[in-house]
Length: 338
Image (cartoon, rainbow, N blue to C red; front, side):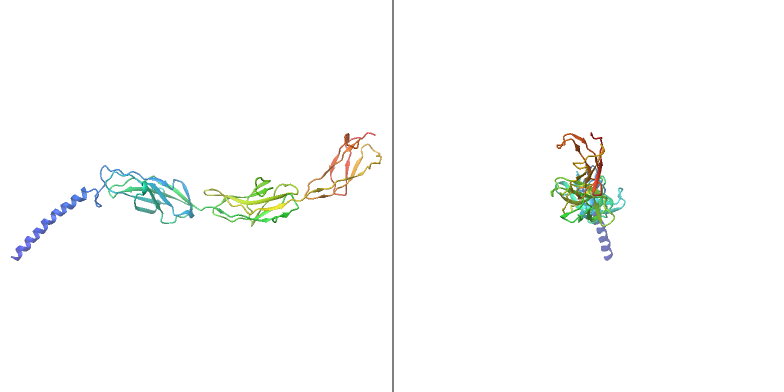
């Protein structure tokens, strides 16, 4: 009797299990919402996400990370819910993948935005792409877009050193000097721009001088020639080229200086004097030099000889360079009438 019952129970268990296996196989192939569905669903389309940011070729400063990926969500006609996947790679073929975002849901208005959870090294180009999938069907990747992480150039203001602020100088061509500005980052074509103006507002410029930085701690520029006895204002800033374009640093403080007063004393005729009779019709005129002070160049004396005290009828007007001695001689240019 015991043997008969055991055999019967075994048969019942096998018969009960067979329908369960058949039902399981039927659910796996027919329910499109099943997480274990096998293979893609026929006739289903998942569109390509539209990459928005970073755009292809975009430059991103290293200090503005993390990098944010923004793309327009894909569209699907599948009854299954879908999600997105995005990749960051070191190469355009996406062989060396640095990070993969998985299970990214669609955002509001169909816009998707994710921050990269790692810091990328500067001086390199990276690539990214995105796609949508639902576990059964997988949409195509967006076109790969590249971006570069770069180190920005920063420029501090230079410090003015000479001439001292408010100084009265002894030349119209002063040497203007600054302590070099601190420039960080991969800068090139660095230029110091010296602005010199007759007004503190710099509404007009007397001179604008652009010079490269010196190899030492200071950089200097020299104007070609400023006016006499005038106050000038000056300031300096630095420009350089960085990876993302030209970078303009801040201006230094504004300083002033005053140019010297030029004094040209009046020369005094010495000979021939008013009562003298010359033995020649081509006399040599001798004058006692006038006082000269200030930053002057070449001083020229012009002698005029007339037949009247009003100097209406000028008969001779020779000129010559002022002598460094106490007197200057000027030779007549014509024969004077006797």
